[in-house]
Length: 198
Image (cartoon, rainbow, N blue to C red; front, side, top):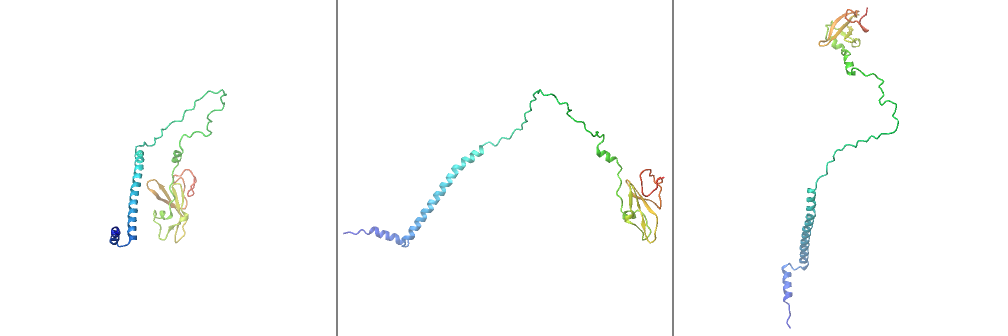
């Protein structure tokens, strides 16, 4: 009887070459096959995505954009004759306010513009006051283009200083005294508090 141990010896020799552990060899083969399957699946999935995506992208590129809306006018309503009696009320009521011949901005611009009232310190720079004298801030009073200020100092005084504003030159000292006549100052109307009208 001949024993057929050749294939068995060959298998044992193969096992010895792989470290003698059939378990590790089988696991290595299994991992290799799984890796090959994953690569094949990924390649197939990429091919499917490319096969679907390319025609969609191509169709989107060649598709015309949305048409721009055309401006249209609303249809003009047709006027049909009616049998109703015409109204007796007038179509436009006259305005109760008379039309203005000049715009309001022109009317206000014709009114004379008066300067701002100066401060006591500003007026002190326009005159040479005696030493230790000054204008009392609460005494400064203005009327149109005129200003008055009462001085105060070491001794009591009863006069006031009069200043006049002129366009181009500004505020200037005019005179001083205890009483002024409006006519002498060229004032013919109004009610200035610093002079008397004759």
